[in-house]
Image (cartoon, rainbow, N blue to C red):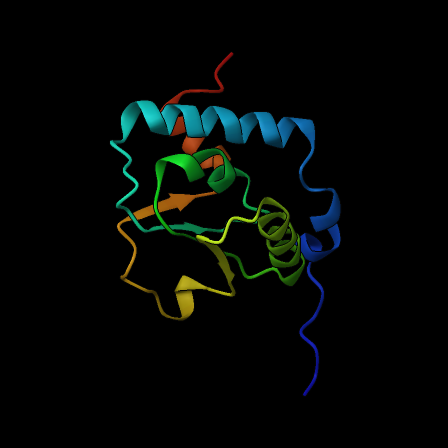
Length: 125
């Protein structure tokens, strides 16, 4: 079986969590907390999760969280972060909703911060 091609995201995964992305994820999480009634009874899916920045900022407010990304490099970094945090209620999956979605999650999150930022107006400074 041949290996899938390495993507730009795979190559950038190890250095993805820089100060700007961490701050952005924290601000998006804060805005979501203000605007969405999050609950520990919710199962959450972060689609396009990358290294899981957004989910880590929301993990205390949600139940089980699934981090989905199509980049093997990003998933590997997220898995290491989950193991280091001993976050047994978080898991990583290879998921592309264009190939078929899942309907088990009640709180889908998006790691697509730039799209969210325009909607939530948290980055207009």
